[in-house]
Amino acid sequence: MVSAVFHSPRDEVTPAAATPCTTVSRPTVAANEASPAKVKKPPRDPIDWRGIALTVLPPVLSLALLVGVWALATMKGGSFPTPAETWAAAVVLFSDPFYSNGPNDQGIGWNILNSLSRVGMGFGLAALVGIPLGFIIGRFTFASRMVSPLIALLKPVSPLAWLPIGLLAFKSANPAAIWTIFICSIWPMVVNTAVGVQRVPQDYLNVARVLKLSEWKVITRILLPAVLPYVLTGVRLSVGTAWLVIVAAEMLTGGVGIGFWVWDEWNNLNVKHIIIAIFVIGIVGLLLEWMLMSLAKHFTFED
Image 1 (cartoon, one colour):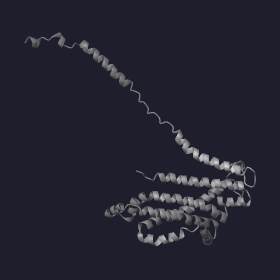
Image 2 (image 1 turned 90 degrees about the horizontal axis):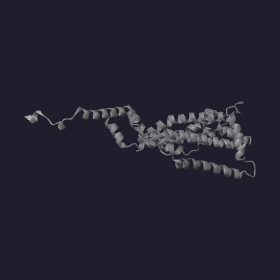
Image 3 (image 1 turned 180 degrees about the vertical axis):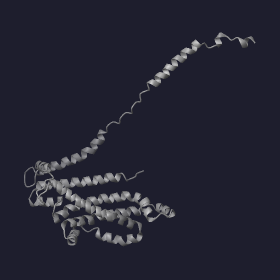
Image 4 (image 1 turned 90 degrees about the vertical axis):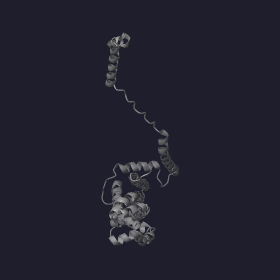
């Protein structure tokens, strides 16, 4: 009984002993809350100078090689201008690219814009006709058997062979050039779209048949997402062909355009401007293809 009432002083925990523990721990927690630990930023990836060099140096070296060969070939003079002379003419030419002194004397900027407008109209009409036609050919066997021989017959025809037909039908140079762009740029879109539709897995179409989807829903929900990369490939090929053909068509039809401008400069024996036009045509075509390739990357899905 005595042991139950009295306790040894060693068994008791004095408040003084407990106080330091509590007084030390609380300020520590408060300090930790008041000053949170600094989050270290992840280290930045080092710049891949080797990759940049391998990307930039090859085109720069190829351009330098071209200019070097050109300079060596024209070093002894002659009718062919040197790179320095051509550059000086380009600086003067692009100092005022949008001047206008009448329908037959306009800056190179207006000529490029007129050519692009013709390409846009002919290419747009080709897309409106060619892409739906490709869907029909790829979707229905009867349509494929009926139209495929016509495509095989007309596709190899030179685009400029269609220009007299356009002049005969439209009685004007501008619609004839647009017609030529239309007929030469429609085939890549038709063929690529039809191939894309034919390569859609049959399981997708079987599911659509089980769900009893309408033909419109089959096209918009199943075929279009699967065929879109093929369509964009056909579009990219078509726009390159259209820009290639417009120069030759404008040489024959006249008017305002980069092709007519090249032919007019040849009649004036201005070789420097012809060389400038060649570079301009190549750069514009490269930009058109680059824009369409950038667009196609957004619709290309890779595992």
